[in-house]
Image (cartoon, rainbow, N blue to C red; front, side):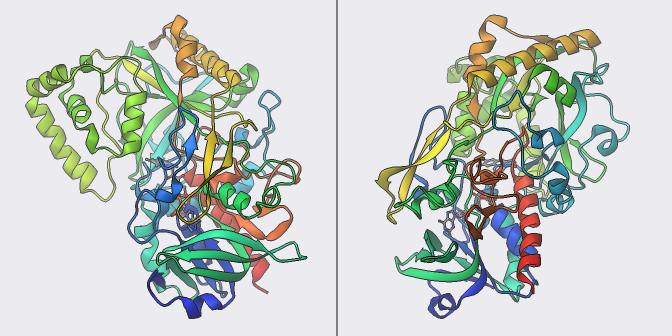
Length: 545
Ligand SMILES: Cc1cc2nc3c(=O)[nH]c(=O)nc-3n(C[C@H](O)[C@H](O)[C@H](O)COP(=O)(O)OP(=O)(O)OC[C@H]3O[C@@H](n4cnc5c(N)ncnc54)[C@H](O)[C@@H]3O)c2cc1C
């Protein structure tokens, strides 16, 4: 059943339930779907309504270049999946290892304990089967650049897969509407968790509805699924007299990680074809090729986990000569603010004036018309959408995009401000920077990739050696919020245990990228969903008796 604020909630809310899930994004919805039919009563609370929007209660501050906290997240049933790009990539075994050369790494659970839930997570994300190798997903395909199959340093046999992209609110609405034991309650925002006096457990949670009425909800078990920034915010704000729930080791809000990215240098292939465009896997899913470092090379060269992709030229530089890219540049106000921000920041060259862009458009109107038709049929109207527009550089070279894991650093953190939002909850401040060690590692990675491509004779990587270090240091964060309630084997070194239960409060769980102790290069949602399915299995075995 799905109920919206405005319905008479009072009778329902007065009844204690077994499980109260707070937040209906990818994590909360997949957890609720997994608990559908489990035999006990589950409530899924969402601050927003059916329609999705940028929440004014996400306002706060951040150290540049980190975007303001209200960007890269949405409020409403489905959460941020209403706007996500749909790139699905699993974590790698190395992400779970304690790597001596990267501080604060290592998970208390193994890769296999997460990997067994990836096939089901792939289904939730509509991303096909759990197979990320080129040779098996694209049988018979050419190498990414003809003549470059990778070597002992560079692995060129991986792909990333793309979701429809699936908006979890739309996709799983019907299942939850029909559920006999799960009730979704929209328009109820959690303001606080209450600890039982004299007991190590959460007794109730305070909610405010859209009419400003307060409600107290009692449950045996609570799950916070409010996203990687709202999880620490609620855990800190619920215990203002103390240091925050689960914060014995002073880890709550700390070790905040974002993937950082930039587009630097150009690959000049000596051979063709080059696998630059989206391809379809043999199970019909859009995918793109990646280049990355083998685990052995990561250990030998002390590299964080990262990937490289062949990229398109900067939209803002009219020298690309493309009518399509100039049209996108001129119409950038039509883009999501987050994509506009990336487009503006991700330029190594200053934006050209508008006139050369208008010239590009006028010179190739038929090309623009072909693109518009493709955009309409393959991007707007198709149920499985072409993820984004890829236009190759006119000179045959390919700018190189990387995105990288960030070393967990306690000084990158979410804290509460004195300023309150309109419901009286303290706003957040985000302190984030790319560490010198990570910037140096990415620099080494570019040089290693250049050597590897050079050895193969298949391509040349052109880099501006003098500028590269500075450019890497100015990389920008992607909108992935991770690590703020990290999983650990002891309360001294984290906030949740291997089952995602908050240390010291065994009836409070976290379903979110907040629990990631390290962040891989992989976009987070697939792993968020895998961990939510794993948590559902744990709750089923704990609560069914
Ligand atoms: C433009 C963009 C592109 C992206 N592309 C990708 C991509 O390609 N691949 C990828 O893996 N990820 C991508 N992401 C990130 C992805 O959207 C998130 O990883 C994912 O949605 C996180 O799921 P979640 O359930 O943890 O949080 P959310 O989806 O943010 O859901 C949290 C929910 O909790 C609700 N909530 C918050 N506080 C409260 C409260 N106090 N009480 C009640 N409810 C509350 C919110 O309203 C929201 O609905 C992208 C994000 C953006 C913005």
